[in-house]
Length: 374
Ligand SMILES: *Cc1c(COP(=O)(O)O)cnc(C)c1O
Image (cartoon, rainbow, N blue to C red; front, top):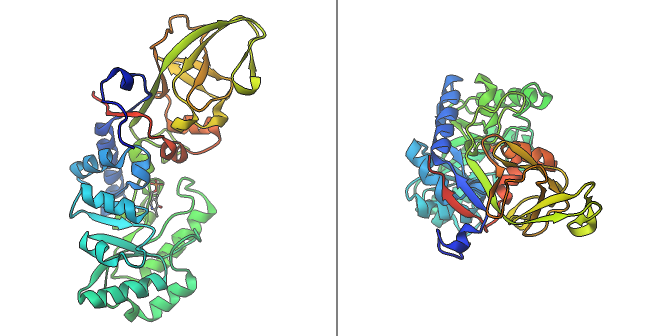
């Protein structure tokens, strides 16, 4: 959505603020690239699908390119086209593939479809024949996710009939990890074997395997091209250990009003919170329309400096209420942190019973998005 108000205007000041630390984003990409290479991997790209995980693709993609990233992954064709407008000539892979009719546009724009089955492959082969030139693409082989990609039977057919790839310039064969954030898991062990079979079947083809967490799995999942997304944006790729990534997303909202209520008064829809003492309530200008999950009502905290202020009552569409009885210095206009360096997207997602991925990609269009200055 276009900005409704001029940046820097009084109206803009009253909106919740989403600050993006692009230096931290670039540092995170370099960190992932170095970790991947330490494990024997070759190149690291970036997943910028879903509007750069909600952060803003137009902000993050150019910064990643400047940091040295040359391979970008998006999910949908319109994301791929938008990205190729932003970064012409850039290598772009479209994970959900190329819809029939869009083949020529993909090729004109250097967009590589991910071929998710033999039918996709056949259609791309026909396209290449019409172009009378090899057309680049990726081939997705399923090794346990059972969503997209060649299944076992298709994989064996292709292995036994490599001519099915005629005319297709196969940039990479790729597969996707089921439980990369749980290094000891049974699924990861099973996928190690299947990845080994994939390597053996296509010894000449470059492979793309790891997502963010996969980069931390070591040599088995290192490949020619890693595809991290979440960790770039500060999400924790190694939940069993301290988060190695720098925080990228900082979210704050202004206090609109402070009010005093008596013991026994209730706050918000459905009266789900009742004051057990005379209380001070701060009302913030942020709500579920801004991607703050409604289930966080009575279940999380927000921060004033390092003080944790309980969210009380239900979160409404545009408003959230906090108990600030013990924080008398908070006044209308004070900015309260929803996400900051001390409390990131993983902690907030935990309180909501979801994952940081969902929180990030739910960030609404109503924010004032600014680049964080250091
Ligand atoms: C989203 C996605 C990624 C990036 O995963 P993260 O866990 O965010 O690093 C990589 N590969 C595929 C196929 C994806 O769908």
